[in-house]
Amino acid sequence: MMILKYIFLIGIGLSAGMVISSAYAAFITSVGVVKYISVRTNTTNWLKAYKYVIVVSLLTGTVITLFTDIQFSLGIFGQGILITLGIFEGIFVGFIAMALAEVFDVFPIFNEKSKFKINLNYMIFAFAAGKMVGSFAYWLIPNFIK
Image 1: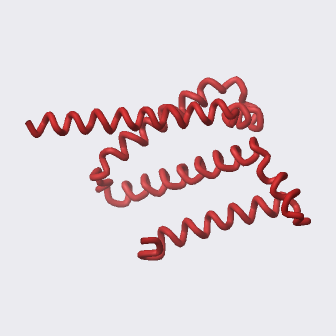
Image 2: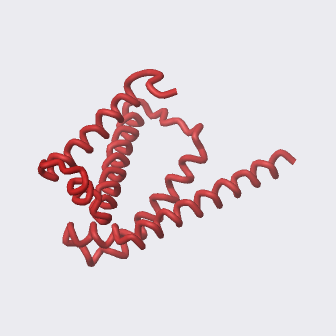
Image 3: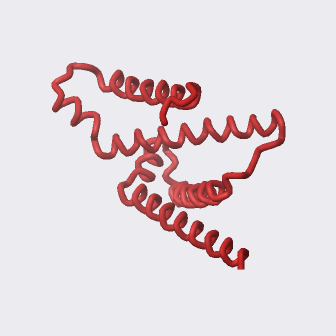
């Protein structure tokens, strides 16, 4: 009976993850972020591959999140894997956030409405630096957020 409970919970978790990752991928695709990224990087011929990579990455992240008890007990090699994954995850989140902001013209509108007379490059750098400092504070200061 207990095995049926676990099978049921795994099914619900995978289904929920698939729904959320599909919705995220559909949102990113429909807004035009993927196309925007491919145009900016001159890789429009890889557009379909970008979409597949996003969906597979989201599903992989869902599966990994389900099994939170997985330990990278490979010593220094395992720590290297975690550091590498963390760096790539941070790059991905920052890249998507900046692409979304640029697609929605957030920074030019903010600059115009706020009457600040600063260069947009400085504003984007300030947001990125603030995000980095906040991330370091969250991960390095014990009990930073409870």
